Length: 494
Ligand SMILES: Nc1ncnc2c1ncn2[C@@H]1O[C@H](COP(=O)(O)OP(=O)(O)OP(=O)(O)O)[C@@H](O)[C@H]1O
Ligand SMILES: [Mg+2]
Image (cartoon, rainbow, N blue to C red; front, side, top):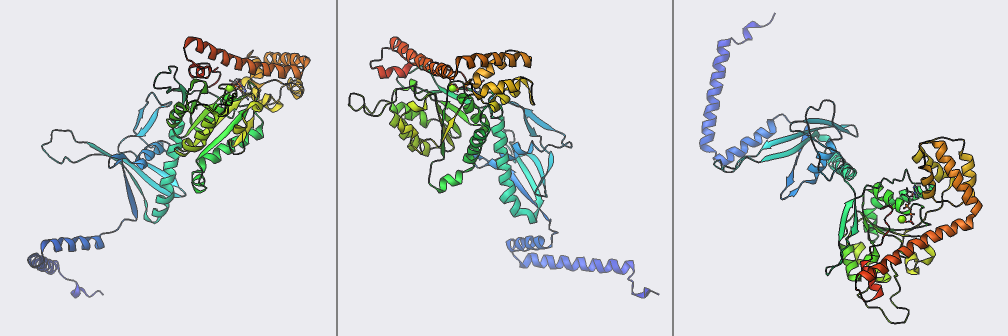
């Protein structure tokens, strides 16, 4: 049996509570009188802090701006989260600006998302709140305050701050690069008192490493080299070198040098600056142009052997050239020195059809980091082109005959590509290629090489001719000055 006599009756309970409440009020009023208000406030908030049930979760608030500048974490979160949209997402914002390739998709206010990182669950929420008016009589509309809330279990705080947030920043950068339309900068044609300037157009060259027909090992090593280069910021800093890389592409016309540059730009998502030296008059102009190039870009100087008669500082007659004029040493010193040290992630590419004609200063070890030989079409290159142009992935009954010819015939990938475009029907296109190969084979390698040398020389002759024409059109005194106005670049690819 329970001791019923010990259970208090409702009326006794009520009177006990009433007397307790009265004494609490008494203590409170006494405390109000004895303890000064600021101390009381402090004590109450401390007591509240210790007795409030604590949440195991931590919420990071990522506001749109930090002071006057944008909050990079906010911008990155905005981009990153649109790759995490789930079937539960109900509202999204879409937009497209002329500079972007694709639609931009962003979260709408109030939307929530769940992400997982290394097994940790992360809850994201996009919040738009109207900010308080500092003056209630202010007629200006309230401004909107936008922020993301990122919440997770407190025990993961270090991991989230040290690895997840940097991961989001990095991913967003890659996504933005992917969305961005690449630009190609060329020199504008009007050479006036102020010199030449860069003009940009969208670079929509379709060449990629996938479509490029070149020796697979060489292709792999170029890609590896580029990938390593962009990841080595800290390395370059540590060893005290400017973060730049130089490539010299050489080979006969039509072997894919310009295509390789476009593939590099598409791979890295770097803009291209096509520096036509023939259009530049003085070292000072060159310096100005180089200093106005942006980071994460490829500076291209095509046909270095013929686009300009870059000589040593001494002329043939022994006199020293004026410093104001463009010289090879001026170009190389500037590229190695000031230019590369005042920018990051710079790539420079020289191309030539005649490596043997280059000034030794350009070939000196350490000047160009990688010399890449673009060769005639090989059996592997042909298969790559057959795949790209005709969609043939496996074997075709005409392949062995073609491969037999390729072993001892010099034909450029450009010539092969031209034949493969001659018909939608694979048999017709491959037969056309066989015809070309037979003809080349009869003519002999020697003739083929002569053809290529002739093509390169024809290109050079075109360049020289254009320079002469400019000389006629513009009354520039010295022959050397003619290059300043020569708009001669054959623009096949870039
Ligand atoms: N290696 C290659 N792989 C795929 N396509 C190629 C290759 N080489 C040439 N082509 C095709 O031929 C065209 C011309 O090639 P490209 O302009 O790249 O040659 P190049 O080596 O730069 O020639 P040049 O020395 O005359 O500047 C390209 O647009 C491309 O269609
Ligand atoms: Mg080219």
